[in-house]
Length: 312
Ligand code: MLT
Image (cartoon, rainbow, N blue to C red; front, side, top):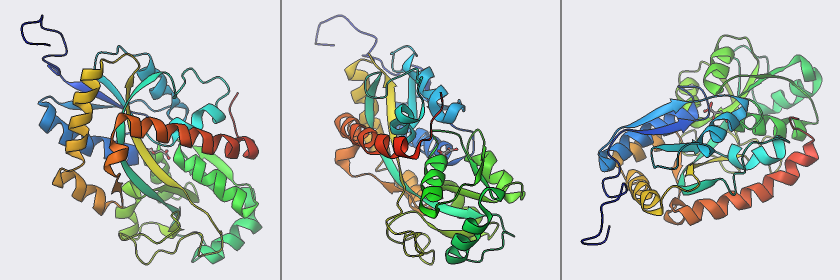
């Protein structure tokens, strides 16, 4: 408040714990980023950030929940590309990502890895391409539902291969990876923030990374593009959102804490180990997230409509 003016609720914000809603199962890649980010942000906010997992409908249940939550600065959402793909994937989406939120900022970009169960026959991506074309829907592909990046990656992969797998959806890629480790499914495309420890321990077969160039954390892993899927690229980005109407002073304070966390050595080191790259400062702002989200909605809408994948 101005000097001498009446005290407002924003003056002593935050004065109790804050909920950060994760749209997928605990232990998965979004959850890993959220928990590390929450721990770093609680240092500057002086309050705990409690991660609340609300999986379902490819992330759209959590986004709906936050869009409808009280705009008081105590409920936030962390979400990825799914925020931008949902309008094309869901004909009856209960929220509009471009109008129903206040934007805080972006966090980190994460590559994906294409994995097979340990005893899947193909030894590398070149063999996998042949195997996939020959076996089609006999191959089970796990994902985290329509709106998950594992679904987006799988959709682009099937399109690039000109084949159709049998899709098995889970509440997140944590249970999907458990199914892959147990041999109940054959293939999963998932983020390095969850997969790196399993790749390093050789519990899964790594066929490649989904970035155009090889990545530092897995230098021996070929890109899908160099193995024959020219131009194949999926990169995961993360944004933090609040319900529309959250006071600008509160959003500014939360954003300052977010930006401090993105410089926190514990957070940056953990992200680097897991293959994630902190976004440049221009993307760490509300305007940086909002304009990026718009560009991603514009990018993915036509691709998804062309693929003809959607829920009624
Ligand atoms: C998760 O946290 O489970 C993943 O981000 C789900 C996905 O989008 O593939």
